[in-house]
Image 1 (cartoon, rainbow, N blue to C red):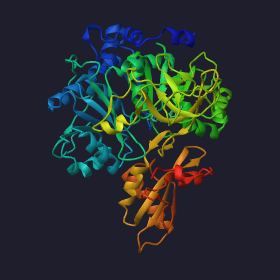
Image 2: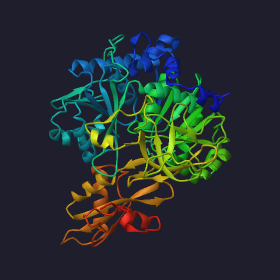
Image 3: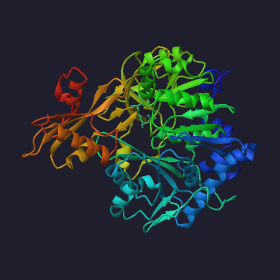
Image 4: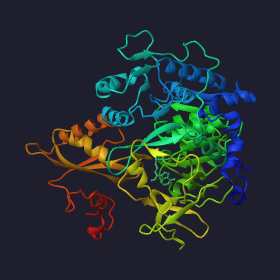
Length: 566
Ligand code: 6R9
């Protein structure tokens, strides 16, 4: 029997108070996520249980118990306090998937800081944009990424400290601190910041169509939703070995790669290495993974490798598989059933929702290709895009809307109330995705309602790419759109009009691609560049990205006056 039991019964009985009681949230006036992910598990007698088994790209492994996480996160909290950082300060974690990333995340929360996780693959422009916006006070990083941080430091007057977790005795510059988690004096007890349920906890940046990336601000009580969805959707149980393949630079890697599993006292495994089917299967076999949370791009890559690598490994420990981030093709669900004897269960949510809001639940009939049904406690609908009223007709496509009020919902876009307010209409939070609902209440994803590019599950904003392209000496104007890709669903394609004096060439194409890869990230790098004389524009001068996109997808362009508002 799965944790959720009967979906219908849960929907009928559910209220968020029950989820709080289940977690003991607020007992003895304790609301801090850091406490619930470490100290509380130890207090319940599970201090010696493995919290994290980590494997690096060389195959080296390290293991940490919940007691280790408790003590090392105390050490992080202590050093952060000693440097003068306070409740509410933004502290960025900028590391590969090393143990320090996971444990400092807990430590920052314990001292009351707001964690700002950023992908270690981010280049200087991507970093500056997000650190400037959040007025980040400190960064925790490693030597590998220190060069990038040093090069942008002068542009960030608010940045006081860079904490380097693997500096050893190497010389550091002013404002940099060497701190080794394992060598620092062990701190058995600290005063955990006495935060309330509404105190900010995590700030995740996400891309929109226009403007800079926005920081979705979460609060400590988000853990109530993250813990219960881990239990009911991911179906984690005390003896599980849980593997979330997501990087904590992405919300999946924090909500379900740190908070959700640890709040439930679950052992998780982390592989800090690139993708290969054999490596992944060997990892599952070696660590006896039982619950696996991954993403469609990875599943498509595994499908490409076929059944042979599957047959070479013992994957019989797998009990429950879940996917997120992009539409999960029906074929992928059917294939996983053939390959692993278990279907992948699709789950849908966003940085802004903080936790899973629509999903296929264990024990419930899966309809391959459907995202499933709303989580108990979430009121969802498909709305008419003009009136924002729920559409009652089965199968009609509209905008996914959610009734505000669940615990992990973002509370604000950092310093951007205007954009935040635009996400609400007629009492609904508008996700920005289109879907229909069938007669049994299952949601069928249709597409995004904006120009954001979803490449391998990562949202990339066209504005960010176009802004970076404009900094290249040859580019006069540009448009970035998503183009279909069999593995990554979409990849970035850039249309570029060159400045006079520049000539189209393969060398220039490569140069521009590399420029974006370094300044932003490998995912933001255009996989294709098409040089054009000029870009299609509306009368008011806006670039008609949708026209370019429609061509790439072979879609009807239709009446272009409706594609962009003048
Ligand atoms: C968790 C996460 C959110 C956007 C979302 C939608 C797309 C996520 C999906 C899905 C189809 C699914 N998305 N899950 N599309 N089926 N199961 O992905 O957060 O990075 O903010 O992306 O991703 O477009 O609006 P985030």
